[in-house]
Image (cartoon, rainbow, N blue to C red; front, top):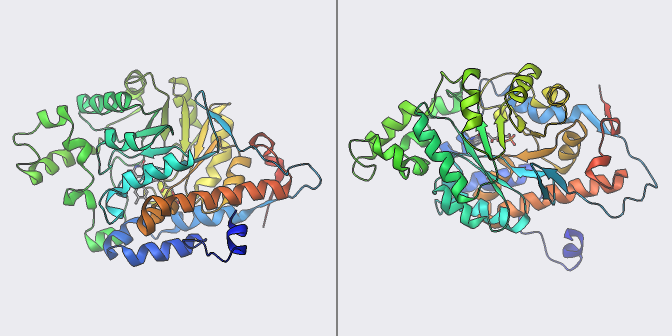
Length: 378
Ligand code: FNR
């Protein structure tokens, strides 16, 4: 479609590359917020490595294999999705859009594309409001498990009632990583009282406060900060997590095969292999962990993110065994640059490139994308 638009003399509404979208977003964002999103932990080697790891694999083209028409659909937790793409949870999405409602903008992009959005615990709008914008596209709710179990339960009950299709529990952020850019600026948007709406609107959380968040926002923020991290969460709590919901339960941040097995034995429905976009543990590229995670998952769905920038990256992650592939910063820059239209543009570009990559390389369906289509490059 984009070529035909070009032939008619119209330019695409936004840049077509990741770098171009990031630059446009940067021009619209407060510099500290830009750094919060763009930055990562340590010397940011993990973050760069997440991206660079994709260059370590090449796709071997096959010819004459009748891939002029493609079917990108996948099955995930009992539903069919038109594409294997997902929108990773981004906590500060709300404030990344000038309206202060970036989560709603992203949800509109999800509704327009059918790509499921995983809404963060730190959505700026109440999860119910965001869910209402998703239309017929399923959403997932990402839970950072607070140390107050009743608050956690309340958040999950609300997600169920709002119609979310699954619960993604993020495990790698029980405390914040060493992020020099944020430490330098002293920028943590949450501590300015942003992105806490889902706590502030929660009846159980409110019952923990002496004064309502409307009366004393600082005190409410302090109470939030004390319960949010939950460093004590352990495998002993897995049964509790499992019993929290009948919805599909997905654990995010799992990279070690033994952790995959523990999760599987504990009745989890899916694994989300991720290094949090290089923002948390300074470790190694997530892509390097994917084959081990997939092998240990023994057929359980594996969502992958961290460093996915292009449609070719999506195809490579699928070839290494991911069931679905999520992007974080790419659509975040889209929201900052142009709201729902910007995010939709980014997602459609990634999809179009993934689709073309499949076609030109001779792969008709996602099931055709197997490890033997890849070669390891030096
Ligand atoms: C994130 N990520 C994240 N993850 C999560 O589980 N809950 C959250 O609230 C957030 N918040 C968040 C904020 C920002 C600004 C970024 C960039 C990321 C991590 C996110 O879900 C995902 O794992 C990474 O973004 C994937 O890496 P890429 O695509 O950004 O390289």
